[in-house]
Amino acid sequence: MSDLKQTPLYDLHVELDAKMVPFAGYEMPVQFPLGVMKEHNHTRNAAGLFDVSHMGQVIIRPKSGNIEDAALALESLIPMDVLGLPEDRQRYGMLTNDQGGIRDDLMFANRGDHLYVVVNGACKDDDFAHMQAHISDSCDLHIHDDRALLALQGPQAETALARMIPEVAEMSFMDLKTLSYKGQDVWISRSGYTGEDGFEISIPADHATDFARELLAMAEVEMIGLGARDSLRLEGGLCLYGNDIDTQTTPIEAALNWSIQKVRRSGGDREGGFPGAEVILTQMADGVSRKRVGIAPEGRAPMRGGTPLFAESDSDTQIGTITSGGFGPTVGRPVAMGYVDTDLSAKDTTLFAELRGKRLPVRIAALPFTPANFKR
Amino acid sequence: MKFTEEHEWLLAEDDIVTVGITKHAADALGELVFVELPEVGTEVSKDDDIVVIESVKAASDIMAPIDGEIVEVNEELLENPTLVNEDPLGKAWFFKMKPDNMADLDDLMDEAAYSALIA
Image 1: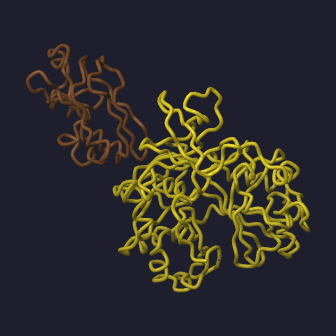
Image 2: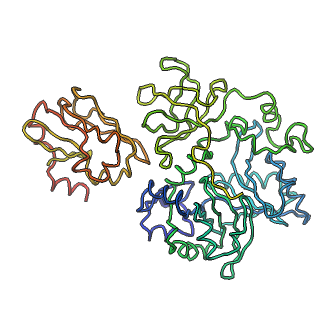
Image 3: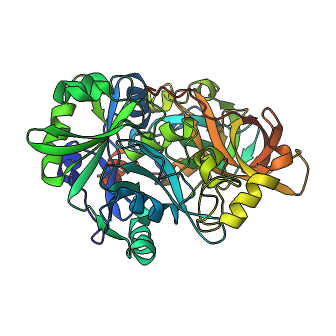
């Protein structure tokens, strides 16, 4: 593991007896002694603390000093409305390529005089180079390797975090604020990737472990690994970059149309103007031949990424593929998502997955599998 | 009790052998969420994949430890896979088989040898 990087919480993970695995170029905890199932349930029932410091935290600062210039620069790379995003608010989005595929998905926030963007760990170097290549004329870019990123997720996240930083109780879903904790600037957003209420907390690296320890000392909070993060986001219907979305899938095929605001769509004031706009806007108007759906296996066998899908128990032509799946501890049965031919994508359609040489029935299901518990 | 390098245990009583997985294996797998068992009456050969188990992490196979016929399977595991994590050496046996040759057990490890393997 010598080439792998470590997050600022590495020593804490080892101290807590985490099982460490390589992930996105880092040594990351896949589970703690509690185990994936209990970690998952603890997050849904109380509060789970996640180290997501492998993710890239990028600052985009307009050279002109005018935030609108940074917003328009970012709009040249993503199909989202950045200009219309109010100060202290965050949105979900994705970098697209010239074919309309997804280079990465991300969160971006308007921080008054600059934009703050959080990208996936495995993509962050490419993303940063891509942004440098295209918007460095008008913006200064900086990637914050000096800050950790923690996520506190679950129905008791507010109770726990508010003991340390009372102002978080006043925040709504997708608010992002700079707050102070023991003299340090912490950038806190009310967001996450589990389908639960919660917060994502950017904190200077050398204060991250103390901050985490203070949270972990509370009865509500347990440290949670990547294993449970995956089952939580899967039940939440959220895409994992590299599995459910990648450079070969477009936002429309991925059923992420909602993330493209009207102003960037055909007929909008700032229509197009992002990589792959022609493909994406045409797909929005004319439809797509395949799309991402929720998939509920009818039996007990979990079905993982790569499992092929067929229309009938005996048909030869593959009509789709599961892109991620596993056991959903909260729903108590297997859950999955994947891509299927659009004419077979209606909810409750029965399809067949081929698993270990057998065709097993699955049903197209609404996403998410568990209702979102956001504080709007 | 005898053990295989695949982390199975075998317990012989008269001409029937009960097979399960060791605590070491169950701990390494994590919580089981799915078990698929062979059909009673199946003739199996050593190293055939005959049981599928899935934990929250991954799918694995359990192989037939010796040649023989499956005479009983533990259907309780189908409804309650985590029993394997709770009591791997007891209630969570996977299947019982009638070996073609009882002497095949002699080639397997005893507890001391298995303990040395996983140490």
